[in-house]
Image 1 (cartoon, one colour):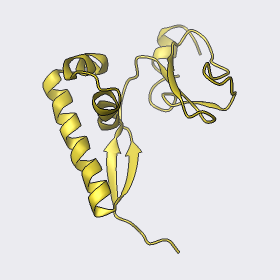
Image 2 (spheres, helix red, strand yellow):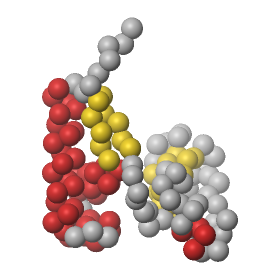
Image 3 (tube, helix red, strand yellow):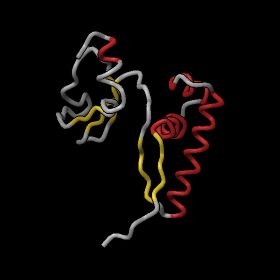
Image 4 (cartoon, helix red, strand yellow):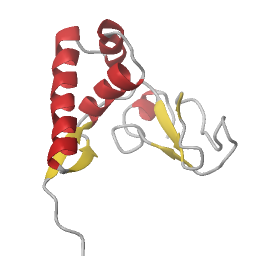
Length: 125
């Protein structure tokens, strides 16, 4: 039986800040602009996320990622076959991964406002 671990929450905005700063190695000004937040706010997000990730690694906590009210600039699609991610606009439905051709894809933005705000604003249902 698995031991119950203490959990640590990484919010979706913290996740996105870490993805942009550390994974994609974007400059903070560029990353902040992409997230449509100020550079000081972006810096605070990255610092909080790094502290949480360090706690996850060092203290052996269970990390989970959960959102709040966030807004994506486009759909973020993840392929379950090649594990790639890519962005897509709201103008059409994506049916296969452009990298490997798999139909096993998931829209990561769908549960966080899209389908309600952006698609309705574009006249799509």
